[in-house]
Image 1 (tube, rainbow, N blue to C red):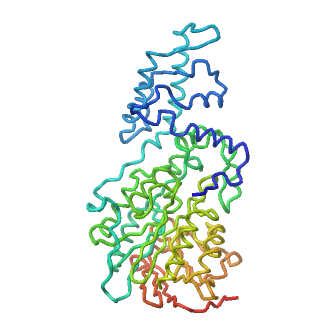
Image 2 (image 1 turned 60 degrees about the horizontal axis):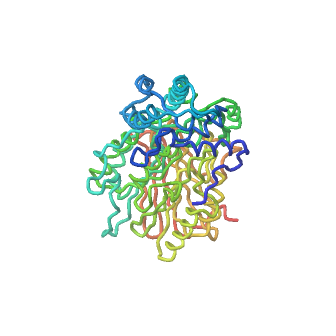
Image 3 (image 1 turned 60 degrees about the vertical axis):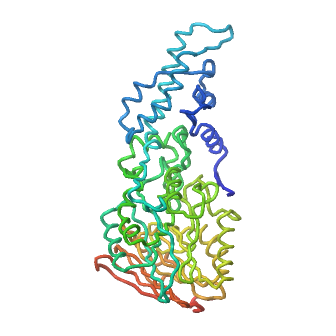
Length: 497
């Protein structure tokens, strides 16, 4: 997939990221197998970065055992994994350290102690900071389908002529008690399919930076950009943002969920495994901040794509009852990270082809994504990239029955003109448990907003008939305002030009 990894980044940032990529994943060696390099790869560019003389850096050993054994941030067996990775290098280099100078080997004993201390300092910096990348919790197989090893059962062929019932919800953000209540309410509705519009996890990006692996912690500065909040740019002056986040900011903005994907999977297990309801997972920005989470998400839920967002993407489609549901990956909206909806990229080409194929086969299309194209939420502006590249340049050319999204922690129904001026209904459902958002002031609301409901945990229940989609916003536990709608094929938009 074509990527725009450093869109608008200054040259110095690109240089730092280049160094980071060279160092990423190499400090402890990428492999402990037969081709394991007995020196710590990446230290030569590190020496250039911090102006340490390269004399003696070519083969460097140290005793890291004492450092590793005292690190409280390493959990879930990571201490043992790290020790196993470092030990072969340590043993080999303790026996074969060579210090090369202009006059040949000299004062090896003294230099050995110097390099041990230098190495221990480097290792301790990485390990203290990077306890995180080494502590992503493994998925418990109890929460997976025993027949497929995945989180969702396949969509079965339908034999009934009754309308398909689809439950849609999103934005849990680790709030498990509320989430369990939503799941039980959905089970009571007996849906044929569930579409989750993203943000199962609560975690934040380390240092508000892309995940460069271990090298993230070496970057002394990173542009801090958050759409709609220009004051955040001041945080760009904070040095080593990843280290600061891991050591100081962790209690306020946890960089990882303590139970990984297991909390979300355990909460949805009655629906997915006991009731055998297919589950379409649309990735949210919080689900994509870490490479490990992206890979696991692809393994668990994406049925027809390889598990690598960088090459393919977390996008796919399923068909049920005369409809095709297109699940899109709108990315994490993080400055400098991969752009999964880059113009002319693989995902948008796939979407264009999939929609055209659905039109040709007489299938109606529902598009599900996390970042909305339109919204009247005060806390999060809609994504202009999603609006331009997806809604205006692609969706408006096809027969779209409905667009569903999340990200805004509220319920909103909007209407915008699509192909031929026909009305396209956009639903935002972000009431799965996350802290609530609020409606924007009248002057900044989207002109297409029909209904906005804030402060209500909810899901949306759809009935997919041949020529219309009937929908109802369902408050959980009977609390809060509700909404219902009918999106008919060929209905002319009141806002059609």
